[in-house]
Image (cartoon, rainbow, N blue to C red; front, side, top):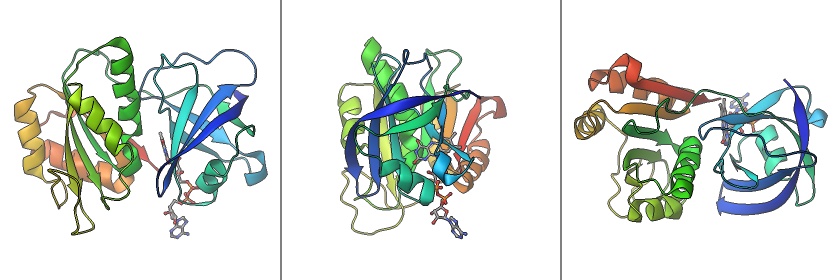
Length: 231
Ligand SMILES: Cc1cc2nc3c(=O)[nH]c(=O)nc-3n(C[C@H](O)[C@H](O)[C@H](O)COP(=O)(O)OP(=O)(O)OC[C@H]3O[C@@H](n4cnc5c(N)ncnc54)[C@H](O)[C@@H]3O)c2cc1C
């Protein structure tokens, strides 16, 4: 896999745990990509291991954005970069995107697993599309929901309908959010509302595994389930 140097042009705090870095290549053009794809990042001083990050920006943007949740050493190194610093990034890769943009879609995400879908919604916005995608979005805390306001704007502009689930705290402050985990009935309701929709599942390995099981229980056909596990 080939890597190029990219420069940080902006840092933005999204939530207490999520930071967005805006990047431009030091040389050459921004590579073409499809919303839903990711890049690999290496930090030579942290060893040879590469970690993957979904592209948060739209293909139409003149920069690349990565939104990173602070977890271990690698993500902390990434969000500690300052404007002007450089890092090494691979070409875009992955197949987590609809083969046909017009197919009805249901996005099921947990936490930072919303990122491929943020890029897809930004792409829809850039091309003036109104796909009316249904999103089931689970988070532990109402105070740490990445892109809460942006999702609400996409909803107001008829690009999607968002159902929020808050699993960890009782002081749920998000309007119309449900204070529990996503269950089979939520997925079967989604499957009935959007017949033949493709279900895109993204989050931790455990979340994706559970949602895959529940989607099948809800009657979603195996071939209509696409998954991306963040590990
Ligand atoms: C296709 C793909 C796309 C992705 N996109 C994104 C994205 O857009 N944004 C994003 O933020 N991440 C994304 N990820 C996840 C990302 O690649 C990293 O895995 C993530 O940033 C965590 O890496 P880390 O080294 O910082 O944390 P790690 O060191 O891997 O730690 C992760 C978690 O495990 C815990 N942990 C680590 N070691 C131990 C241990 N020994 N015992 C107990 N607990 C431990 C940590 O406390 C932390 O909670 C993506 C992953 C994939 C595969």
